[in-house]
Image (tube, helix red, strand yellow):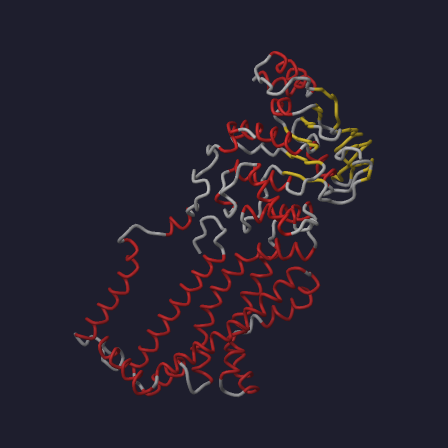
Length: 258
Length: 282
């Protein structure tokens, strides 16, 4: 059996209609992600990086080109493809446990098995003891961990992370990056992370894809060949960061210099 | 797993495994002493009432004294079986409230989910809604005669519309991002409705139920007064005709207190049903 979780995006283009005229959002996107790989997509806001995730997860099928998971063209949404949004999107009327369980509503697991895997994933994200708590009682970081657990509980072949840490404070974000890495090592799920935080992308990923806007396209692919734990202050790390920022264009260089 | 996961830095209340006290509930408990602020005004009014009757500022036939009212209450209970009229009114209102609100929630959900259902009922409902319950009563009494069925129907109508409209609105206000989530989790349409759409509507349904319960109780007085031989509403109108003002006031006080109790009960129910809502105060 080949390893599952291989994603192949070929020649994907997408247009929006703006005042009757087509506006190109994505221009010839080619991405290959190996099973178990951690790939990040960085780029300025509006470059279409989140749109790519929406296409892959199946929320939007209005595009040309092909998206294949393990060689099969994707169709609609599927429990094989999980996603974590920037807003945690926990349903406020369900407890943490019920929110995570909602992912398993249509899984083929038996009741006991469901209970066990929910408990396992609550433990995985460090929320044991909070099973019966409602979302409003959770801090932003805890809610996002719960969302990650919900994304993983059905053991998807690929987990899409749409700026999941973007709304968190700096300290919580660093902690959760650490947790994402350890979760990735345990679950061995293929991960695609969309972020505008270049440090985050370099710290977590095997490869970083750099996008620019108007129209959204991939301008550079950079392999991060540093051993974990990566040192954000090392010259090698800084070198990769400089390279990425340069690719993102003048705009990003100014931001970095500021 | 790193030790970070077990740390409590991100935890608002560092009580892993413990019950988390709800901030909303804590805020609901006023400081000792302040919770009795609401009693000051009724006591003041009672004092004014006593003084006005004690100095006979108002003739007793228009305003009997509090003591005379209490005596009238005792007499009504012992000699006229006031409790039977009271229970009769409660019974009418409860039936009307249950019929009206169940029909409203069912049809409201249906209309909220299907634009065709809404289009089908829309013009009819919007017209009927504007004819007040009291205006329906004469015709309904012609059909059903004086008594409970006509009263229940009229009150149920007045319960139906606020609940129906709020249910419909609540269903329509479901968040797009939650629908998207349901799609990602591959929920079926019926799962989507049960797990996402209806819970989204519950807050506005609860608010309208509380409002409708008050409307129903107020309307029972009118309905009984206009079309019956029993109940608190009937007693009030009879007392006016016979100029037994102390009995009239007894009925008014009972109606006010029951209305107050109904509202507080609905508030408690609302708080329990919406316990997942942050800082929900009703």
